[in-house]
Length: 397
Image (cartoon, rainbow, N blue to C red; front, side):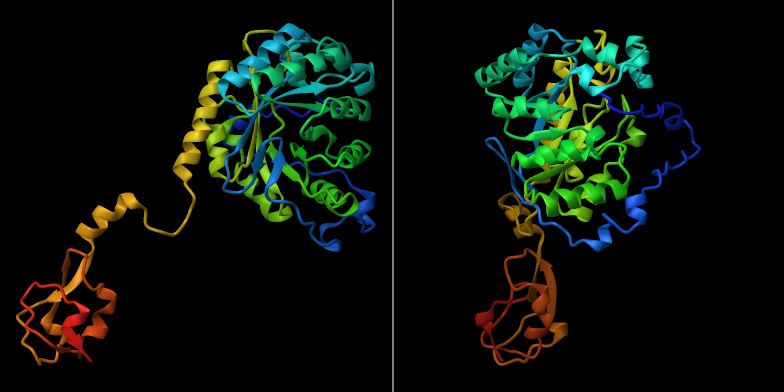
């Protein structure tokens, strides 16, 4: 991932400790203190369900869209990036995504790398690191063509308005914004102005920052097609920090579709996220995790990505449609194991039926026991033998 501002502290030590980690607090926000941009002061925006991402209708209860995040794992080499497109398509991903930036425009010369970036690459500055990971416009043209040829959607995260303009010119189906730009309102405004569906990661975000950003998108820009991705901004994120319940929290709080930008190395995390309500999944992958680069260690290799996507589809199969109805496969057991009201003794015509003259036994093809009270007090119109299921045409009131 491209880190634009100060690095996020590594949580590996905290994850291995039984002691709870201290909760970070947001810096004081003078605008919020003055009463601006508060959730309570603005009505809730209304966001679309489904959202159209290319040929995919994304929504609750629908097939999840999987974005294979190539990111910068190509190490600035176009041939590697093209091979990653083919690999993502073969794994079954719906989209493959890259990152569009110019190092000199993104970071100052003296901005330090995040700790995980320095550990992985030894780079002393972000600009030095990111300059080696850039792709130019011609490379993105080639990548777009390769995606079309392979039948996979093309996406890239822009880190400036110029990057955004380049991607819009290439006909992207949606705009994917990084967590680091959640409060970058000039870029947010430019992305919203494209009127394309917007996918926004929410890593390392405080609730008040999310409130302000979502309200701006909904009420200032009238963005309807929005997907919020839960994200843990650690590379890699541990299972103990996945916090998948946040997927539903985002959906409940903002009414938007939600998903998961997955920084774990677990192949089952996508399926778990779908079970937690994710409609869109974004997963880092690489051709070879042993290659140099800042994100390689938090990425899946091609066979793992394929297993990840198979796991997602298997979970979707298991989740079903949630309808409260009997399935055809249950008919035989229902017929054999449900119970019906039967005669507990021989009942003669003209007898008034008492409760002690009835029994409840299998099989379940007669009158349900829930109607027992309606049978008691009825008069038999014919002889009913012991163990014979009671039928409505045997009775009169």
